[in-house]
Length: 352
Image (cartoon, rainbow, N blue to C red; front, side):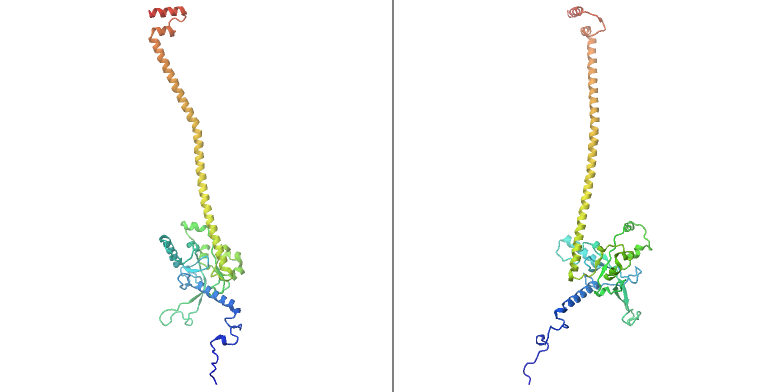
């Protein structure tokens, strides 16, 4: 008995029906389930950790806001749905600017899709606190320190757990309010203003809540906002969801670049039109002033000619008066009715 080698149970090639039963993990029918579990785990990591440092995001409500159900404002999101700590994002942008100045080839932690802080938007989760691990005693844990409660990101409408990665969710980016410009200029702010209340309220809701309430139904509490400004958190790469978001963002950036260039061209064109109007006005003024200057010049020249003729006439008259011969010939004060014979005799007599 024995000595035939037996069967090695750890080697699946010798097991009956290995990889053929539908309940086994390596069956082809479970490939979709495995992919879904991987996407869920990836989404959970994105929703709970910083994309730069990998540190766990702090969802503790901020005491400054006075809202115990809203997380602090230290979390920001990029257009691709990744979450960052605000300080880490600022440091990454600072390092990027230093790399540009030093011309170093260091990998950017944020990615090229983030142009600056204008592309990073604050994230405020609606959080629910769970009981402490010591059975509800939140005062002392044996070391003289209180046990910290655990906060979970949930949807304020459907109460779905967003942080699990199973609930598709969106960040609502509010449209810019013209009144905010007045506040920046130094106008006094009102603590009871409705806008201030919205600024410190949760802005992350689930996809199911959006479908149930509709975009118009959410405007009063979360608005004003547009559907194109909503950011999908942790979009899955399966099914082309991430690629579609990436394509839309790139086209939007290109549209903004073209609009900015067009605005600069319009300014230059307007400035050139203004300069042309000024030069045309100067030309018209010059054309109007030319006839006046020409008339003044001709008048001065005519005056000069008249004065020269008068001076010459006075000189001739003086010479005629001083010379007897000339005065007898050209002067008419003496004999007015002399004949030609008398004039010749008088001239002959004076010359002799």
